[in-house]
Image 1: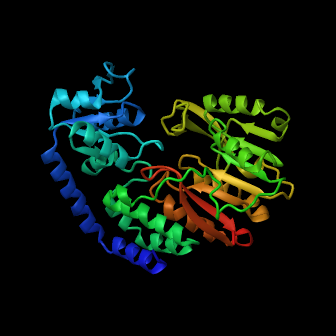
Image 2 (image 1 turned 90 degrees about the vertical axis):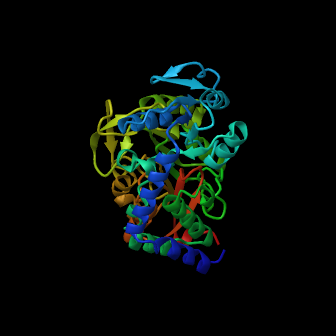
Image 3 (image 1 turned 180 degrees about the vertical axis):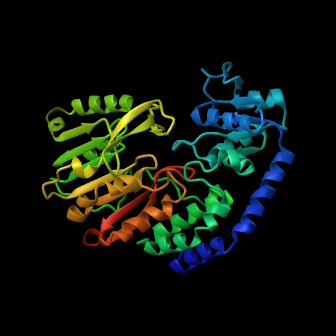
Length: 392
């Protein structure tokens, strides 16, 4: 697909008026509510329980959880019985619609839909179909918002598209936009398991590189970095606000022997200034900042903590929607060192275009590449490469 054809597709998507998109979404809601009164939520995990609570808030009571985990089957979770997918349809009949409430890099919606339809013969929906039917309760959620809200930002979207450095980035950008506007799961780019080191995008890193991992989880990206570098690095700074995840991160670092002395672990978040914020610690990758979070965690600006001593820097942000604030907290480092950056650009609806536009506004000569290492619109990463380090 050429740049001209991708740009033509973008123009076609953005040609719809917000008013027309709002009516299209309203028609979707009317049709869904008319055709389906009985739902089985496929996936009795955190997202499934969240969808259940939101449906109950609008007076809709799902019939059952459907889950493949044998240990969950037969239980009652949040007042809802848990059955196998086939068992749910056999008990409640073909009018039961299965709603996929899983966001998992190991299972995308298209694959789940195909499997469940073959297994049960029932209609299979994404939880996003329900979000469109009840937007006042569900949306915005992560990067998802009503299509009319996306179209109102068409000018910013077009500017960001022009910043993308290669054809693959432009194709992926347009695919994610089509998904958000039309719920077209087939438009999404395929997940690639490059884990922050996509070939042809990330240049060779020197042996004294400083790696700054913001949102370090349990050390998964540090592990990938060390494997990519074959253990050659100057320093690693790893920031993880979730206390449970941070203990696992410490445990991993401690297992590295002599290398551990060059790895600095912080049980903290990163932001524009030194402060404290409420935090919801899930003990997994879904931990996030929240105004109603049960704990308070320290937030630090990278500029106050990290010392690079003139070495090359690779900076990674996966900080659950606070990427922009985190960037503001390392303004001196960006100006001085012009690091290679990998930034998650999917946690908030505007991130896909606003974060590239923000980096461009700094005037530091970055080239922006887009790659997807997750499923169903998740784990979208913007790679920002200084002009002189772009892979030829």
